[in-house]
Image (cartoon, rainbow, N blue to C red; front, side, top):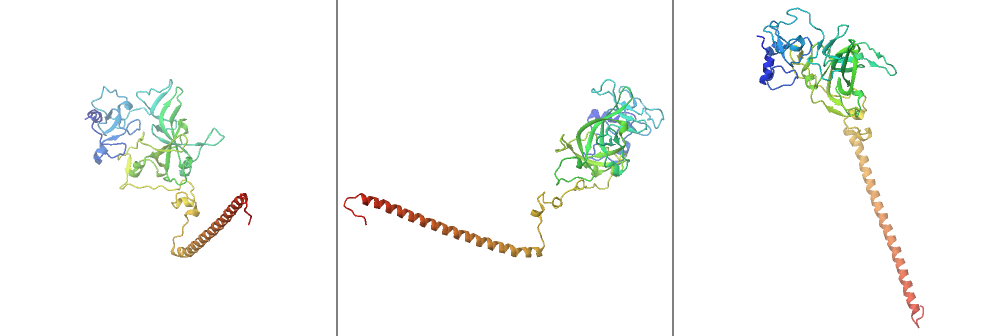
Length: 366
């Protein structure tokens, strides 16, 4: 039966059995249902958006726009290009073309380079890093060590101009050492951050592909056709100054977690962050929050405690004796000051009395 069940579900408002976002909706689909609803379209994208049709023979789903079927003329029987071999387009145009398309530009869902490499919207690619003072990119051999120096780029748009030149537009990802952060911040071994920098590149600059996943999906399993060293985690985006970290609320290009495209773990893993992406002083590693070592270095053994206790008691006694001495000196100083004040007052009173006696007639000075 070729009736488009996905289109009917979208009209009726019923949720699809297969959820490409990787989030649990409370009801898990059975393995049989997952195998039945396989998306294998000419565009290479695994999303179930728009109107789709199912092959009567192999039961795979394809987009109407990608295979060139009009919406109002759904065939009674449909056979895909593999079950009925025929020539199909390798580069799938966007239908309709976006409003932001410039004159002379044609936007695509996927493009194929001259060497046969296919690039799709949402792909994450390795780009060579340009050396300072040079306009030519530095090509590093495509291996694990080389990939650690490459730029990671997310393809968001693809187009060709009138000359047939292929371009991609997207944003960069930054590694931990490329951000501004406190030394106490921890990172995953393969963590990336979505950068605020967007760029237009030529497709011939792409030297390899990788996969950037959210943490939830990363803990569930791994997408097929990717090596472990080419898989990264991204949970945060950065501002223009690369100082502030903001959580990414919605992934624009989610990973398909269906069984035909994703290998799930028997049990979810729990990755841990550490200080490995950068150098950290020892006192940060000990968990003292960045306080200097001389303030944090506390000996907790019984021997050290016993060695330091007599010194503390002796210091306490010395401080108490010094305090008593200061109080005694302060008391003597106050007493001497009071005695001097008393003598001065007595002299003043005697002087006044003598002056009055001198003014009385017939009184002789004693």
